[in-house]
Amino acid sequence: SAVISQKPSRDICQRGTSLTIQCQVDSQVTMMFWYRQQPGQSLTLIATANQGSEATYESGFVIDKFPISRPNLTFSTLTVSNMSPEDSSIYLCSVAGKDTEAFFGQGTRLTVV
Amino acid sequence: DQQVKQNSPSLSVQEGRISILNCDYTNSMFDYFLWYKKYPAEGPTFLISISSIKDKNEDGRFTVFLNKSAKHLSLHIVPSQPGDSAVYFCAAFEYGNKLVFGAGTILRVKS
Image (cartoon, rainbow over all chains, first blue to last red; front, side, top):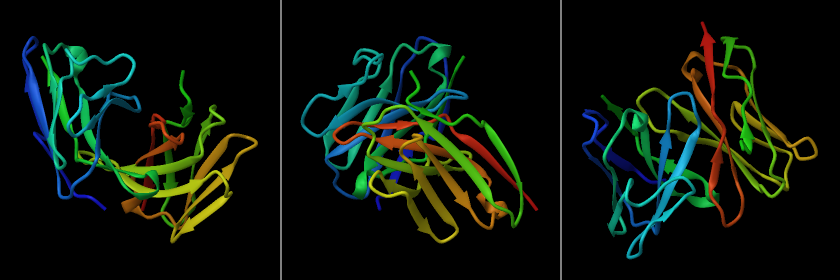
């Protein structure tokens, strides 16, 4: 299994500002994933981040809104840009384990006011 | 289009009894299914999985059943314990693609 450290664990931000969420893994992993869980909804994949290449975004998510960095095999950041109240969610980073299971960080609870 | 559905938003069970959490899916290309448990303020943790070539997988108190013809799977917890109270997510994986999650079911185990 992988141990994933994600921070901040929560934040309250003003609309129009940006927040960068950091994810640190205790082992080298090829692919890291960023999810969003809006209130009362399921986890939705935002993008897949590979080291050394641009992230691959899912339908409905764009790089200008959610820029991602992946500088090495143990670290990634997700930025939520120009925030609005609709961005209030839990954001989770994840890495793949064996047998396609995924390991998750503890999540970042974002509230935009 | 919700490909993975958990139609029961919540379930309440007495301690010691069986908890049954249900999940339906629509994509016949899904070939691997997983259950995750999530406590408040924590990320989801992997619980148990099942390949589409099997119809049952058991791990201690947790058993997952898969009915491919009905596109239905269920998680059985026996006996249920108060520490099992959490949100349970059903997820499906299509080879070479991404994990798709259901909306989750809140399980409350009463002592």
